[in-house]
Image 1: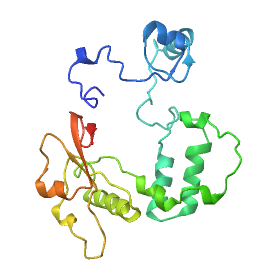
Image 2 (image 1 turned 180 degrees about the horizontal axis):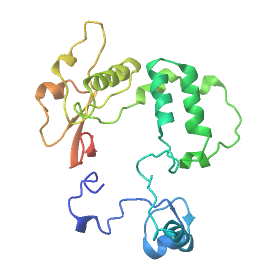
Image 3 (image 1 turned 45 degrees about the vertical axis):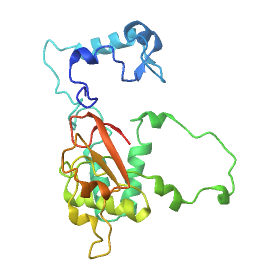
Image 4 (image 1 turned 90 degrees about the horizontal axis):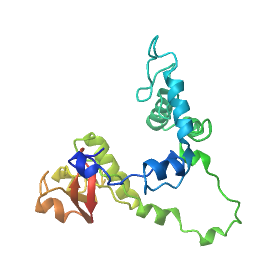
Length: 234
């Protein structure tokens, strides 16, 4: 996590407060994480103590197999579990809208997994559809995340670019560049150029040809730990 933020030493990370607290009461934050941003409240120091003691009960006899990071059938619930992944993959591969609706039902309504599940829409009066910006214009502001060619497959990288070009949005090349053959319209008429191109310390194939085929250039100023991650300035 420190490397992703472009921070190379523990000393520079301490006291930086580049994070936001979620799930801690304001009293805990004031005493132990003074000055840290927190838009939501949460548990008290007494509740934290109770949870720790509950986890340790019976630990002298044996340690239960944890499931905090790796999903386990008898472990705690994970928002991204095998069934969720199965439904999403098959809905996309088979273009099956019924499976996609089943996937949506699972991730949105079955459990409280995310902060968004605690939110609701305020009742509002409907406005005339003529006052709403058409979807064809809204999608022009869509951008993909910066994922380098090499961190994902060539097919995935090109498909994202083609999809964004079709709807008028922008795909991000990441810092890995892209095959120059994509700068030309393909034989099938598709456009696979990444509109946003990243430059990371003048490396990873950042040639003049690469840059002149960009609609937007991002210069990375804080190198991350993985391709496509880190701070950037447009």
